[in-house]
Amino acid sequence: MPRLLLIYDPVTDCVVDLGVMYDNHLSFSPHINKIVNNASRRANLILRCFTTRDPLVLMKAFNTFVRPIVEYALCNCCLEPVCKNVNKKN
Image (cartoon, rainbow, N blue to C red; front, top):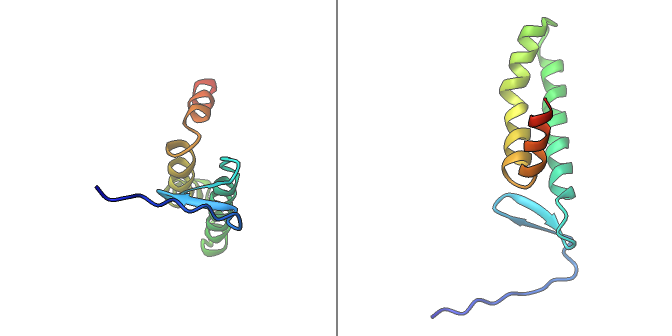
C-alpha cells in the first residue's frame, strides 16, 4: 500500500484544492477575493470593449462572461448553503 506523506508548511498562507483556495484557518476569503477580482475585471472589460450602452446587450454580455464565474466558483464550491438562502429570499 502506498504511503501518503503530508507536509505542513507554515510559510504557506493559502492552499488550493480542486480549484478552491482556503487559508490556514479554513476560511474561503482568499478564494472569494480572487473570484470577485476576476469578475470585476471582466465586467470592466465588457464596459471598455463594447461601444454600445444598450442594457440588453450589456446584460447578455454580463450573463455570458461574468455570471458563470461567480456562480460556479462561489455557489458550487464553498458557499452552497449561503447561495441557497439567498436564492430563497429572491
